[in-house]
View 1 (cartoon, one colour):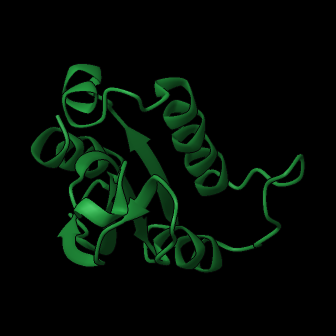
View 2 (cartoon, rainbow, N blue to C red):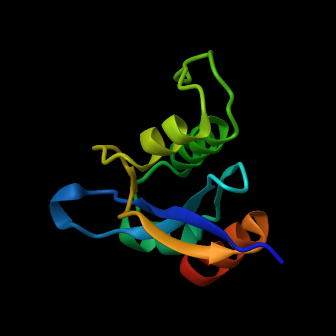
View 3 (tube, rainbow, N blue to C red):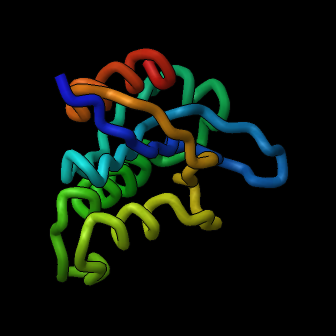
Length: 126
């Protein structure tokens, strides 16, 4: 069984930056040795509404779908042209001042990067 190193970030919904409060809403994982880059998300609408009742959940969903599209390599139509997985992960994990923000980069080992995305999503988001 081959163990693949990987890096990941937890995506956070930060409705009001000045309050420094957030809810984990997704994962972006990259394993160079497995040639794998994937993003996934799960939004608990009740938790988001409790933190930010006025936040537009459709806009949050659209922002997270954009992250997934970039991770999967889609380009054009307003999406950046970044090329390889490394550049896309760098762009996705870079700090930004939007409602969806990546946390710090973490690392691990897995024999199945796709399953690891779901495991991290279950452990850190759901």
